[in-house]
Length: 251
Image (cartoon, rainbow, N blue to C red; front, side):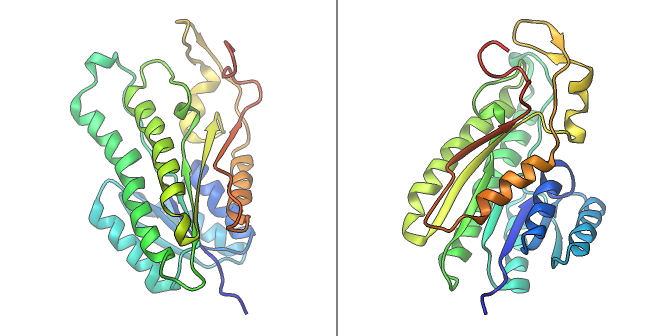
């Protein structure tokens, strides 16, 4: 009998992370929920358990290297393996002119959005290359900002562009270990972080306009699709977005 597959999701307490947890739980994965707010993780874990999934909550700040090491150690101790890592946790910075962004805000975004996924990727590889059966899949949340910036979003956009480099390097360097790596770029899913879009957000032409959003469950379904492929196949990049959001061309 094949061992149950295990998925670890960072930023699992709300939004896209929650959608990914529940979509993977429906597909029979045991899920490890990582995030800064235990109370949110506990709620999502309870939802996953109602779907019949095993769920492990590990409060984690991905900007803390020691917390990341503890997260993966607990995952290995509890389940003995790791099949999917979804690097999802991320933060933004105040929308100020580029030249006015404080160094501390820049560093906080880089530590969470880029260094955190890099360190999580390292720990996942260490488990995946040694386990039997060997291999696994790493999925990075790139965001539409991995392609094109919003006004006054330099730290977030720079880290998401960098995630694309991390994705490509991981996919290349881990072939010999049967580890696949892909990236999902999400645009305007309905989450607490996108509530402001319904009222209006700044556009590249200087105007402020509301933007359409899509059901976040569609993102979870896309992640489950990527995760469910056999390791001989990989979705390197997948973009899922609200159909009518202003992204293609000039909007």
